Image (cartoon, rainbow over all chains, first blue to last red; front, side, top):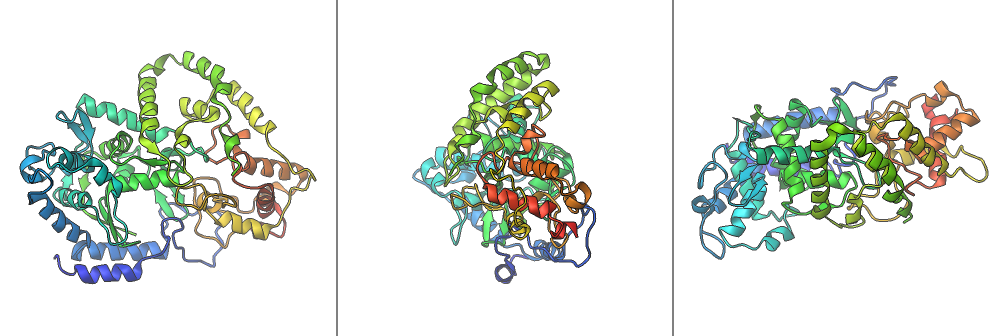
Length: 289
Length: 210
């Protein structure tokens, strides 16, 4: 299943809609709508994309390329300390255990004294166990152009090893619960020139920006929609992006400044939305428009 | 860019804030998480492009809405709405109806104020992001109400023009914790742009009212 990748990647390049994020393409209809269209209504471009996504997910998501790369990184002895993550990094289920780890993060890590999401934990291991410098990893933390950070490939590998497993953020842990509650505050916090909070758009069911459906993060279904598909291969720009990246892009559109890489605020947001999706199935690596 | 005005000093709202916090007996645990979230966010954001780190600080109005779940007590809402209303600058010549064609373009554009946008004016009105407006545009959001046929339904009276100008200039003057940005108040949209948007909604020749 892994080698229609090149073909798929080329297709992705061809189909890539420029600036889709800020202004989703719409197909004009001649009929005059007199009332707001129902939220479930999808334009032809969206339907076409979803069909394409299903095919890609079944037949070879380009994200798998990064998964393979991430697996190599995970197992190789690397960094100034020349140790592998496989022999030194605990993602919460024991040293080197990868299967099922992604769907059980964010979680509390006693060695770090912090609640961490998957990407943050991997970066922590790279710094503490392998001897990489955090500032180097944070310099260009997300993919752009032909560049993909090593930690993105690692996150992709780890996430793929939770495919078709139930999301189970350990909310009974008081450390996690506290960060969850703080995340809920972040989601409701209005500031900036446009007075936007996450919840200005993501706090109600059935809302849209243009044709883009907005998941309600406070509901199990909405939270699941926000969690599924990350990390994902994004056709706009042909890049592999993580859930951490997506949080930053939300803040960008909220007209907020940039969250620092692997910060408490981003972990709090991820804790809130992932825990709200608890008990539901994580479907693995995504394809994004 | 004239955006300084938006951060009206938090101090102005302080007495109200203190009264609010005092009046909310069950808010203890919640307030604790909020305080932690606030200090966390103060540390966790950095300036990028035009999006300066100080945007994370709440102004007085935001602080009230944040602390009341966007449902401030009626008396407080009234007082603060009056403050916002008093700050609306109506055009000196009294003419509120601009050019609907230009208004349509402003309504289409969602550009402005993000860290990836070019700094400075003009910026877009973001209107279609949240509202249905002219019937030709079927890619519209539903965060706000439909404005299709707005002028037909409300009439193009002087009073309605003034309300629409004010609402676009500062939606919070009419509904303190409205989801809609204060486009004129913060200096995002110019007086001319707001007038053009008024025309888009109210001009009998605008496609909105056909």
